[in-house]
Image (cartoon, rainbow, N blue to C red; front, side):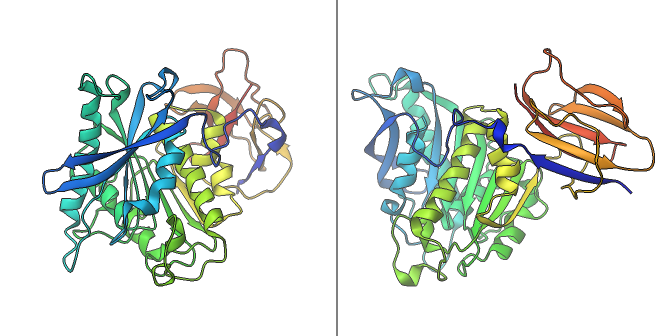
Length: 382
């Protein structure tokens, strides 16, 4: 029997890394627009963007486009802080006034409205004279939303085949849609956040609706003490869906932290070891603010196993430059293969050896595969 452990050497991380829970480096502004969708006019929609001297600064260009969907019977003013926060990180964020369903949810039409909002903003990149002209990365979209908004973001991924544009979805406290979203069709990278005391969108129902059986990559978490209403900038007691044991500020900081990290990874191509920690690594899986956290990345077609500490034989070098190290105890010899995330074999060693990367090894995420069955995460920095 093999026993594994993954340990975090926190002293290797410095304050030079981005702090996703804080505002980014850009000042922000917003504009109000009318968006003509296929099914409806989305009047009074708001677009947030990084701003300097009245326009998007060149240092932010090209800006990916994020659409943030609002909740059932909720106005977009409940989500302004999300637009401001993400815009400060260099995204252009549209919060469309998608109509609220009454009696019959009709989530399909509202998912289409989300796509229409993304297309509208992206079209401004080609609109000469517009402040966004040639400032957007029009083929890089992210969808996000709370409650109904998060559900239609996932339904849009399931339904509209956005393989050339939609790069990631972050869904927050979202009940199942009508028609139902099929989690097996959610091939887009997805982060699904839920509340531990949310009785409007109970976490186990959300997990069954969108997470169970969904393909990699993705991650799922239950925020300790979070209710439904505190994900919004304001709410009334009858909208909260449970009594939160954390403050609204704490709940939103947690949400914005992991949401920003995820969009940084897939829209700004941040493949750093630091970013990995907040999307799939120890800062996500080991967050003290989560009741439950799960990831599904499976880059080599094998199951990644979380570790149980036992034994004291090091098989991978654990001091600098590694963030993660692993130990193994076994009476038998075996071979360890080190792979990069794209599946390329980097090194083969046996149980009596250690892998110490040389100067040719790039910083990033690697996997130690033991006997072709179990993969251990390694994050390497210089």
